Length: 538
Image 1 (cartoon, helix red, strand yellow):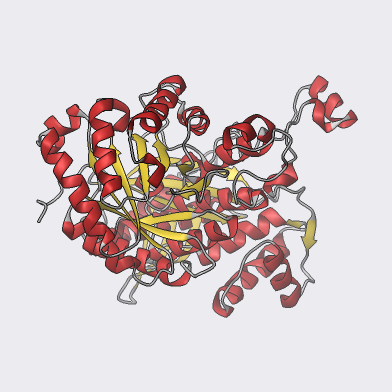
Image 2 (cartoon, rainbow, N blue to C red):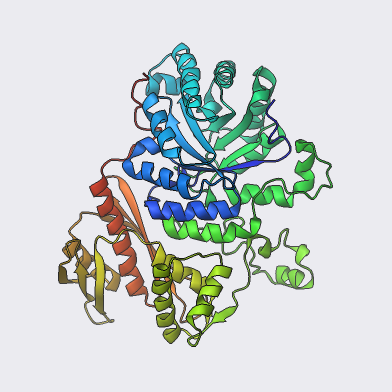
């Protein structure tokens, strides 16, 4: 009997796989590695590092994460594979350096997917599933199997497929609500039905994966726990395809705040204070910020747990209550997710050692080269900004150490504008072959002029579909963070940058997105695990 998670919840993070499938959330290898390291610090049990067969870049990212994060005392490193030998072989090879590798293979089981996507019969799927699980088992001991679109599958057929997959060696069976269709009561009943009707279910952990199309993903997962699910597949900030996945921070904090309610469902006494997951909740906010910065996907202010307004109180009645006693309107402490008041930590006279020490306290471990770049930016900012906070330091480090590959480099940007002037921008850009090119353009505003000038030099067709600016902290001298998204051939690329001058930040963010776009054009097509047809089994 598999009892390794009978009284706790396994957190399976798929930010780097399903989360990266969010439009515009494309990450390079180093960015994925940075996030993987932070996920390990956060305490996730399993990191789904990617889909190795998708592209050489995905394969490299999974391999590096397996090598550097998949240590004996680190998380399990998982790779996704369609139910084909080619996919499974690629996953096994990429995961080989990990101390605890897992292959996650899947095939659809709903009639609508069988008819229109797979063009296979139920009998064929019933044969392929155990065959490919057994093949994955020949490479690793830890195999996870998912019947895609389980939420819309015939339960009786689903039971058969799961039984066959477990018999073939699956140690985890994951039940995906692939299209976010089910309601909590339905999803809970689906998990209960599997517990009651799959004869060998005691040999596998039940996992759940769900999308948030109806805003029910987290509620569905909590109901699934009550009915026997012990692994939750989720993402930081709830990012993912369409409306996203179940949000890790919401699930973890729901289980943290409501321990007494959930304890009995895991066989614990209600009063038990033991955590239900291994997550270090104090790392949640930092992880959220990191993923937001690197993916270019902003967190909405009213987002649960990590939104800017999550611990803010505007109402006078609320403010009065909170000042008298926090529990009047706060069910959790901001410090429990690592959100502390922004204290002034450094100034223009602070030295390199103090800078390095504070970054370590914030959880950043930089190479000497990265530290040098970040320290130069800090000194530049200290000349312009009197008070430098932890949020400012985070923005500097993220900006300096986690940019896209610099194929094109912005050397100079200058803008002329005013209420009776035609906005004009001049840029100097260093091309991949080292040549410096200068051009100028007129636009409807200063940012438009800068982008037109950059486009004239880079000459990569694109469409700007989103531009946003937000301040890192309060005050007239606050850093401005700019996030943009570009579209090229139905693919979306994001860019992010921070500077006290929002025009400069806008130019840097645009260059970041263009570099991602250019790198993608060089690397070729990336397969999508669900939308691209799998090759024949054999």
